[in-house]
Amino acid sequence: MAISKVYTQVERIPAALCERAVQLSIADVHEAMGPNARSGLMTPRMRPLNRGLTVAGSAITATCAPGDNLMMHRALYLAQRGDVLVVVTHAESSGAQWGDVAANYAAAKGLAGVIVQGCIRDTNTLERMRFPVWSTLISPARPLKAGHGSVNTPVSCDGVLVHPGDLVIADGDGVVVVPHADAHAVIDAACQRMARDEAAIRAIAEGAHPWHTSGAADAYAQLDVEEIDTYCPRGA
Image (cartoon, rainbow, N blue to C red; front, side, top):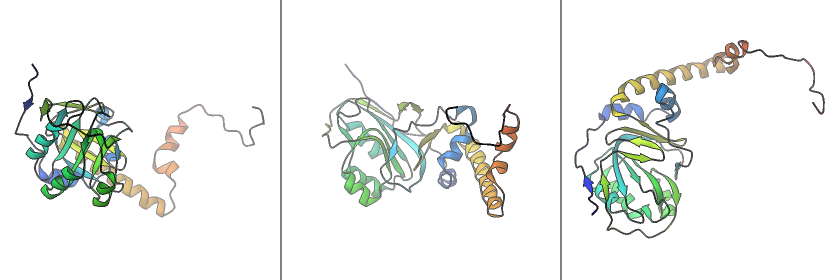
């Protein structure tokens, strides 16, 4: 007999760190993760419904049975202001995990955003709300509310291991997850990357070229390259 597990407490990321993180791009955060950069990055399947939004907050996780979103609702009930709800169902097209009713409650509660491996629906309304939701699919398929699952246990969302309380950051590029223990160091490093990029942009405005400011020229100089000062012959 299946048994659902629901943990009601989560060790969250400090609010001040989330406020720093939301000022960053996930590209900077991803780069700042070093050897763990790929393991924390969700695939290009995970897309934002609304462009131009960035969210950062502690992960509240839910695993739902196929065609069922009961555990999503329990996680939503337990979530707090500033959290990011991470919802997973492995039968992704079997039933919508998120829609306008849940989004209105989440907005009133102050959730930072929602990440769904699976379907969302009521997208016209969600777009008008500018609600920050990322998902792998869109479908109006009716969900049940009866199935087993889990809340605030580790989940694999779009190939990324997410523990409750991990730092989730999402923007127009996608979603990145930073392990709780690494969050301070990664955000510090990402802020340094952002500062370097801003300095490079200022240098470009003053006449510098990305060929030099990005390090591309130095890397190119290390290659065995034959540059030929003419057109490439047709048929070559």
